[in-house]
Amino acid sequence: MALAFWALSSLVARATGHGALILPPSRNAQDRELQEFEGGKSSSDSCNCGDSKNGCEEGIRAAGGGQPCLWFSQGCSIGCSSCTGIGSHTNFSLCNSTMKPTLPKWAWTMNRQAVEGSVNDTYRFNPWRAPGSAPVTDACGMAGGTIRAHAGPGVAIFTDNRFAEMGDLGSHVLKPAPSGVVWKAGSAVEVSWGIRYNHGGGYQYRLCPASEELTEDCFMRMPLAFERDSQSLQRKNGSRYAIKGTFVHEGTLPQGSTWAMNPIPRIDFDSRSSGQPESFSGCKYVHGEVEGHACRQFEAPCPWDDGWYSQPGRHHSVDVEGACSGDWTGGVIVDKVLIPEDLPAGDYVLGWRWDCEESSQVWSSCADATVESNTVIV
Image (cartoon, rainbow, N blue to C red; front, side, top):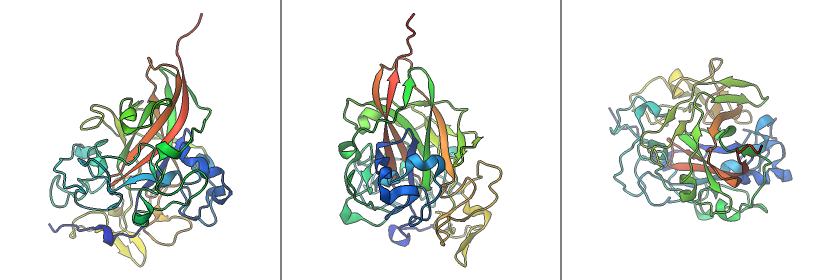
């Protein structure tokens, strides 16, 4: 089978993963209060809408307004010590690492037809293929994902404002933003995140005491376990649909910690861009639109998703979504995570990390929350 070649230069800037924490509202979304981002509008790239100029009805995603989906780390391969800031779409290691992927194949979100480790296994160097192993530039993300000199590829853009400028590190410049969220130690609490551009992969929630430096090491000391039967999709209007989540604790970092697979299937616009072999059929790019069931990487989790369409405000099929697939702005993924029973009361920062599979990118958000003791005073 011929190699499905896809290099950085062959992919347009729109083809990248974007996402952000929605609940609790994150520090990364503080600019949502600025007038230029009202109602999902944006001068750069909206986190909630396909129509950046006119905006949209944000619903429950309003807490993710502004630019929270533009905080990430660019050019991050597994086995590397740092991210390059470039190379969002590559089919090779960005540091010539010999590290082998650790993710079980049943948790892949991309290119499931490829033989593991073969020349057609084009995503094996990207973050999700060894969850938590890829480096990040900053645990709370970098504004625009890279420095300004590398702006452009992989939507490495950011509109400077009074909260941050492109290239700023989230842990350094984002001030505490009290969310009003209070959790009790030992309880299961709801958290959620939303997609703007989908590149598969999976994610984890972690805690770091607010009094400590917000580093990856701090967050890795406290990964949160999932309540595995509680994942659901919540649409913008607030309605919910329970789904069966996919969770993995094999080959993860921290060792044995649990990560959740992104349940929303990526929609590609031809066989080549999806990383499939050149002989692969069932996904075509015809007259500006995608055609074929195989363009969707796996079955959509909601039964009423029977097709897809160009994202409202867009007219090109590289930005498409269905009822619960593709570049899904129609709602959020809701999880329940377990707050450790013996966690001391105090202020904490919730870190959310999304390791992409189709790109060498890691998305990050940080949000403030207060934990109360579960001790009952008689």
